[in-house]
Amino acid sequence: MRCRLSLALLSLTLAACTTPQHNTREVIHRTDSRFFLRELCQPKSTAPLPREQVTGLEELPAALRDRVLADLPVEAVGSRPFMQCQDVAARLLEDRLHALCWPEALVTHQNGTGTAGAPAAQPRLNVQLGARYQVDTIWVVQGKNATVPPARITHAAKSALPKDKACTARTLEDIQASVSRLGTFQRVLVVPGPPDSEKKTVPVVVDISETAPATQKTQATPKTQEPGRNSK
Image (tube, rainbow, N blue to C red):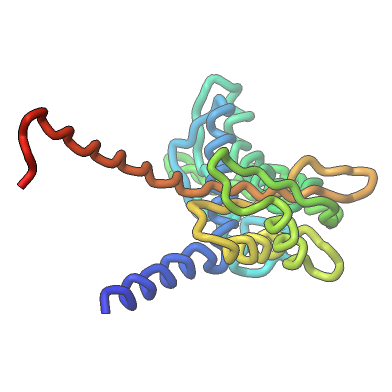
């Protein structure tokens, strides 16, 4: 009974790791963390940006559009000039789109209108997504304790590509799901690499963390029988 329960819990855990948009959430989280590490403007408040405040994202699926517009900085302060801090939401959204296979995305900021004494109005953003890129190669990143050969990971990743090899957030999700089925990994993160603007291609990086193997316990050394004492 305990064995069946453990297997059921393991299945639920693996399913949770490959739910729709799991990879997208991880990519956005990493993008945001890197953005604010290098950014001199820090958010005073964040909020999801309503769809009507943004133009140019109409071709994105509704769930993905809501995800990239969630938790954007409404106000930011820092050592940069005031206007540069005002457009921090635009620059962060641009970074998010780059990390989700839109390497040519451009986001421009337009100040919202508000009344004196009222809270700052949310910014209006204009997005130009640019050209769609294709996946050309698969890069595999593993730790020292890797147990799954890179060739298997590459094969699983390529099997998840669409026929047109279009690099999309859905493509990254499908690659993550396919690779995750190869083993019980601690984390599988799939992100685009440096794009080739001339060929309109981009490599995909599969970054895998595996659980460190358990340390084997040292067997106890048998005690040496004392001289002159016979065993019973």
